Every structure is written in structure tokens, then in C-alpha cells.
Image 1: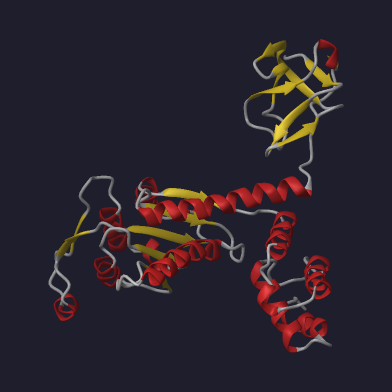
Image 2 (image 1 turned 180 degrees about the vertical axis):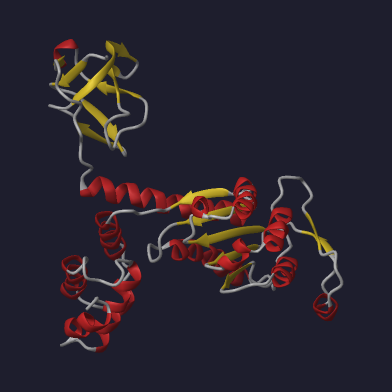
Amino acid sequence: MKMQIRIKDGSYKIRGKDVDLSGMVFPLVEKFKVGAKGGYVTVDGRSIQGFPDRAIKIMCAGEASYEDAGRASTTQREETDEETIERLRERFDMLEDMTRATKKGDVRAMIVSGPPGVGKSHGVEKVLGKHDMIQQIANDGRAPKYEVVKGAMSAIGLYCKLFKMADKDNVIVFDDCDSIFSDELSLNILKAALDSKKTRRICWNTDSFKLRNEGVPDSFTFKGSAIFITNIKFDNVKSAKMRDHLTALESRCHYVDLTIDTDREKLLRIKQITNDGMLNEYKFDEDTVQEIVDFVDVNKKRLRELSLRTVLKVADLAKAFPTKWEAMAENTVMKR
């Protein structure tokens, strides 16, 4: 069993900020040393939430900066609200970075998974919409290079859509278009479209009036990219056969998991996005914005859904009914 040490005076950089670890207990990995950036003691960060799953270096002045903690248990550090907000912000910033890479063609495909109403679609469409705006300002005469597909889609409909968006730099976004994930033929088409080979050729090997009528060939090369936005967790799919197809699709894609499991994280995400200006278009004063956030916070256990969509619903009511929006909200967004 590793020796436990208690930090008397030491710090560790978390999300770019030096955090004082005085009083915390860690398993010792290696005693005090001096490196290029100063003195440090190496401890095991794996057992403490908020630290990397590996050995970490705590910056300190010398061996007197820590002591033998005997049989004391490893500290269970709680992540602060500010740290949680920053962690969530980094994850959603990463989504925007990955979307830019997909638009450039550096990333062929991306699956964005997470609960409803956390801002998955907003982050993707904001980046792609900005690219199209730049293109329109340039006035190069080309059609927009991305398209969002929502709702149900058949396999032949998918084939035709991919043909329409087959050119290089085009991006097709499947937003809650989950029917394609439960259809074997659709998944085979997607696997061909997103294959890791240099040339990605898709074929439709049965006669089709729809293809002839729309002038779509029975085979073509797909050079575009795809983004899938879904609430589905592929690991939870019960059918072994479909799970194999989904695993093959997932292996062709970058997977961005935006899962937010706790009400605390959902509420902090709501506060972050609201502070970043989500309600600016309503032209509320600061007090009204705070009242809306407070209403969601106080009633979080009774809401039908704790999400950004609920905040927008409450904001709609505050705009339409300035003097009685809370009473209206109690009857429309809350459980009986």
C-alpha cells in the first residue's frame, strides 16, 4: 500500500489556474524532486475527482511542504461551480473546433451524443452558419455547403441526399435523424460514404424509379463530410446485429460525448449559456434574465425537462406576459 501524504503547502494547475491543495491527502508516488519548473512531489491523482487519471506533480518548496498522513483516507475533492462551468465550456468549445475541422475536410465524420437541450445542435449550426455567411459575402455564386436533415429518412432518401452533398467541403448534418441508425441498409450506405479508404464509392445495386426520375446515378464517389447529432447512446442498443453495424460506423467517426448526467451540471450549463448571451435577442434587462434563471433553479425538480429549451420557453412567456409569466410557466413547463 502506498504511503499517504498530506499537503501542507503546494499547488497544482487545474484548467490553467494554480489551485491551493493545502490539507489534501494523496497516495505518494515519488518523493520531492527539483525539475525545470521548480520543486515538486509526485502523487497519484487517479482516486480523486477533478484530477487526471495518472500520477501528477504537485509544485512545492521542499519535503517540509508535505507530511506523512498515516492511515488518513485520500481526500475526496469536490469540483467548484467555476471549475465545472469551465470544464463544460471546454467540452462545447471542442465541439465547435471539431465542427470547423469537419467543414475543412480534415475530419470526415463526427458523432455528437448527449441529452436533449444542452446545445449540441446550436454549437454545430453556429460554426457552419458562419462559414456560409462568409461565402455569401464573398458572393462566389455557389450554393451553401452544408445542409441539416431532421426527422425520418429512408435508405434511398439517404443515398440521394449523399449524392447531392457529395462534393468536397460539403457537410451534411443529421440532427435527430435517428431512423438511419435502426436500418441496416442505411448503415451500410453510411459505412461506404465514410470509409477510411482514399476513394469512397457508394453504390445502389437495385433498380429504382426514384433514382432515374431524379437523375441520380447508381454509383458515385462521396467526398463530403457528415455530422450526426443524436440523443442515442450506441452502447445501449439491444440488437447485437445493429450494434455491430453501429460499432463499425462509430469506428469511422470521431465521437464527441456531451453527456451531462447531473442536475447540477445541467443547471450550471444553463447559467453559463445565459451569461454568454443566449437571451440577448429578447432584450430583457439584467433583473429579468436573473429572475428567469432563478425560476428554473428553484423549480428544477418539478420541471418537465431541465434544459436550455425550457429556459427559452420561460423566456417566451416572460416576453409575452411580462406581469404573469411565472404563473403561466407553472402551468406549462412544470409537472403537476
